Every structure is written in C-alpha cells, then in structure tokens.
Length: 296
Image 1 (cartoon, rainbow, N blue to C red):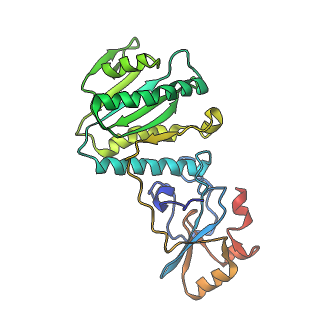
Image 2 (image 1 turned 45 degrees about the horizontal axis):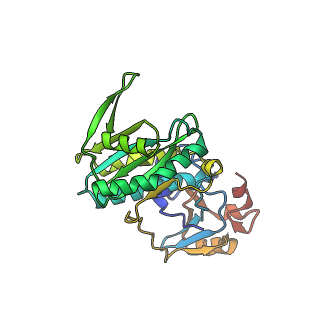
Image 3 (image 1 turned 60 degrees about the vertical axis):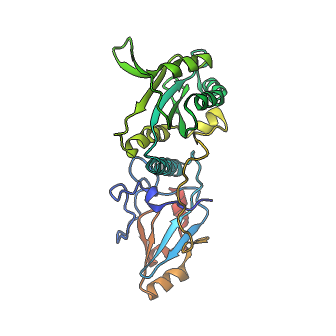
C-alpha cells in the first residue's frame, strides 16, 4: 500500500489538469483527469486523513501497480521527478543518451527482451572499462512491430559521434564504439547515440527518458513477465518521501467525522478527486467514500 505519494504528482502539479483544491462544486467530478488519467486508484483499500487548522484533507491510498490506469500515470510522473532531481544534483557531469535495438532475428516482445537482457550486463561492464565509473537510467520502449528496444541516459560522453545518412533521407547520430560493441554482443545493427551538450537543461534530458515511460503499455507484465520497466544505477537519487506524521491511515471517513468537522467549521477535501465532502454525501451511507466511488 502506497501513500497517494506526492499530492502534486497525482495530477502533474497542474491545477488546469484537475482541481485538487477546495471546491464548492457539489456534483461528483468526472472519473478522468486530463490525458485520460483516472482521478483515483480503483484498487484503493483505505483513506489517509490529515486534519489541519482550517480543513481536513482526505487522500485515497493507491496500489502502485503499473497496470493500474491511475497508478501507472502517477508512477511515470514520479519517475520523471526522480530523474530530474538526480540530474539537477549532478549537473557537473557529462551526459549522453543512446538507443539499442534487438537483433533482426529476435523480433517480438519476448525474444527482443531476452536478446536485450542477455547483452545488457556485458555492455554495462564494457562501458565501465571504457568510460570509467558512471551512472545511468534505462527504459524499454515497444516498437510498432511489438519488439522492444532500450533508451538510456548515462553520465559520460562517447566522444566519437558520427552521422549516419539513412535511405529514407534522414540523418541519425551514432557512436562508432557503441555500434561495434552492440554488433559483437549480437544486438541489432541500428543504434543511436549522442553526447548531450552542457547547454541542455536537466528538464530537457529528463524528458528524453520520461516520454518513453509514459508510452509503455499497461499489459507490459503480461507480455514479457517480471521485467523492470525502468532501471537505474545504484547511486541514482531517490525521491524524498513526504513527511507522513500528519497523515493517518483509516478505513474511511465516518458520518460522525463529518459532524465533528462541521462543528469545528472545517472544510473536508478529498484531494484525490478535488472534491469537497459535505453532509450530503452521507444521506445513504455512513462512511466516505461511498460504495458508488468504487463503481466508476
């Protein structure tokens, strides 16, 4: 069970995407909140309650699974924040990004993942010998034909970037060393690589990986089994956890609680839905959220 983890992350920190503040709107909002994102985790099992001086905040717990319509989006946003935080903390390092594909005879979800995973450990060791100790963050992306490939950012420069002129008229940057190494590890012939200019800001670099996280399908696990969608080196910064001291886990918010809130003249806000809870929500039930919240 996870904290609704970073209230801003639930709706991208953008009040235009979803109202997460005090509201007098009495109709229960639509179940989706910008970009087709659910407003809460349908698998929630409890309620977090935070009583403040002038209001009481309620937040539904979430399952944290990538396969959940709500939690998958929240996970992506939290990873973006984590990547951005780490890059900001290590702005003095050189960074590159690169793409690796599976061998042409290893197409399809399962075979391509097996091919990439079989070569990844050896590749990371070779990069360490070549470039020294480094940090990285890598993510899988699914191609149109169902095969997977890898996108990665790493804290070094290849320093051998060339331009490949392709048959379709486009130019692709690549590293000669990476292309030769990928071929020796029986990966795909196509690689892309570029040394990131020091003028690029952390948000620009973080978005490179983050955009592929958000594109990963919810059936990722059912397609290829227990494989990490995103992986970082051990020294990658972790997000600072919110201070939960004021939040208490409860099975729900009861009718007696709303009467107590009214007596204290405190607004009760469900921050997961951006909804003000009032006595009207207890006309046919003794507990909030009512059963119909599970049925959306």
